[in-house]
Image 1: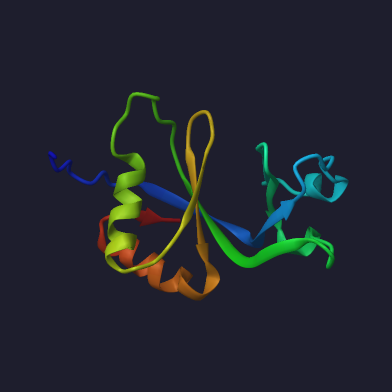
Image 2: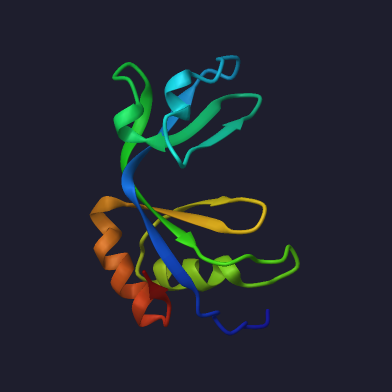
Length: 131
């Protein structure tokens, strides 16, 4: 497999702490999800997954809290190769796990808060700019 050069990206930090929630697949999307400028809803045949600020999540919801988010700035064509690889490769080498959310024209990287400062340093050392 050919190695691609890692792209140099600009990232911005979304300030809230986020939770990844799991609900039953037939559950309606609860209203508390929408009280944020950033959230993600994914429904599959076996679950409803929601990512939103942890402050919005009621205590009775199955969730994993303490996630922080980087947004990759800019718009990327669907045919552009290596955007996520430029983030995931240095973090994987440092054994930092992550979760990604892709939208129509950019990506978001979720990292546990306990690794967030380390991830920031690793990404800067990889040549990325973080606003």
